[in-house]
Length: 388
Image 1 (cartoon, rainbow, N blue to C red):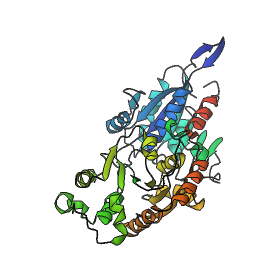
Image 2 (cartoon, rainbow, N blue to C red):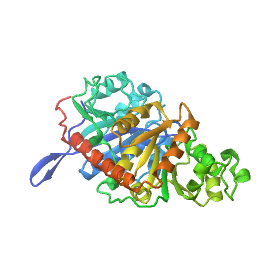
Image 3 (cartoon, one colour):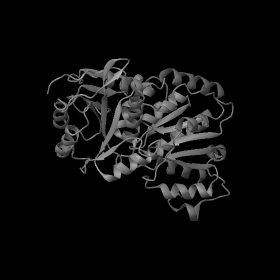
Image 4 (cartoon, helix red, strand yellow):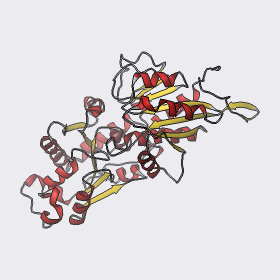
């Protein structure tokens, strides 16, 4: 059990145990920022419920990426374990030392990493209550809480976790995605584009190459600013405004910046603080599988998904099966066919006002934006056994 005597403070004459949640996650060029972003959503919900929050990351690179996404400087303490994020078992001594030396409190640990092992989680669960955010179904996780918002039905492999929080209701969105007012507009003008922080497949670059009939890898020299497309299906698309959500971890970032200089209809956005507001101004959305799909649903932007990694398939299939967000293709299998699907989606919906209104309503019915608070409440209400 967690070391230390539980800190107690009083509210209306009653003793209250202070809960502190440590979030163990990382972000870098290889794994992008999705783990950090969803942990921040849950962390902020925990803080709103008067819980203490601290972050544990493997290296200084992750510390920097985390702090860049804080709502304000030093929003939460960030502790560097100086470890290898791909070898979690080696960091157990350092992690246990941090938990042992934690301020007297009801300590809980929330882990979000694709590199965890059964041995790693089992060791931590013996030390303090542990939660894990899963979307891989890799094994039966030895934790107290399992969270999987991709799965509407509880997977059979979840047997060890006493508390199983599954389904879209537990999607950890930021507070800004609650009660968003959105109305589909008769004319399509603005397009939301997100292929993850790194866009390893260069989906956005390939899409722009098709729309503007250019060579992305040599934009400054070869971009045709007069813009006479060789494909009639892209003529209308050249006049739309594209809002690209990316990060400087994207290896194609400079190419995108050059494109934006050549074409005033391309807008690059990094480290967006009010994503809901940006989505709200868009008429259609294109996104890789992952949390962004849920955010688009909460706002109600008619969208299409793209598979860019194997771990996204559960989410993409869930949305597609429910006919909420269909999939344009698997970029891992064929980038060319995926871009074909995206072009077809944009052309199909440019004049489909009634269809877009119906799609928006279905999406907002599916996601209410309160998943992070449901997870935080479950963590707060979990009673840590005494003794140790």
